[in-house]
Length: 219
Image (tube, rainbow, N blue to C red; front, side, top):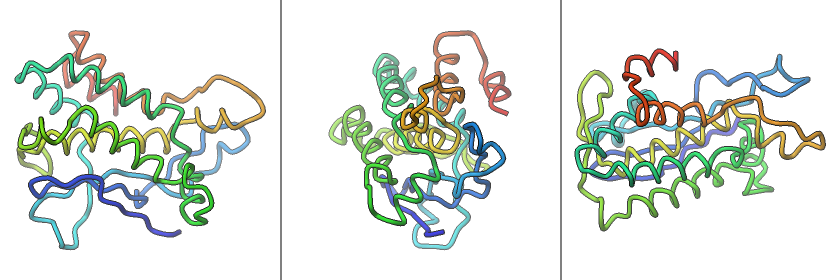
């Protein structure tokens, strides 16, 4: 398989990469192919300042940790309504709009259809962050996020890009909505895709669910 890696954003040495080097491609969720797995696993990596230009094991903070960092930042800065709008638009931008992992990889390798390739994820992430977290308003603002055993103060724009990229990857790896839209047999999606991650924010925002409860739901 042809490797893919692209930087989505960099600020204060913190960087988000989109890549196809996940260790475990997910099962294909639609009928007649349930026993197969996707050709690759798409992931969003968070690169730390000390890792720039060095060989490293790229990782990504869990969804609940990304969500909590943005939520606590919004509470502290009295921007919860702004975060609500961002979260809602992010999930609607990705759900059913991102091709499945195998289609993304095939389009990338052949270069025949850019709209079915990873640029479909890159452009959506870029637009969401540009609209909801413009540089002139948010550059320099940070939020605490625990990652690799210690607490970092990470630019909020970087965490926002990481969240959007993670949603896109989740939709590609686990969703079936895009595939079903291309099918001649029109049926409702059965996989939550990126809506699963978004539901964690909804629970945190509009219920008394604790972070521990939400974390357990994801396991």
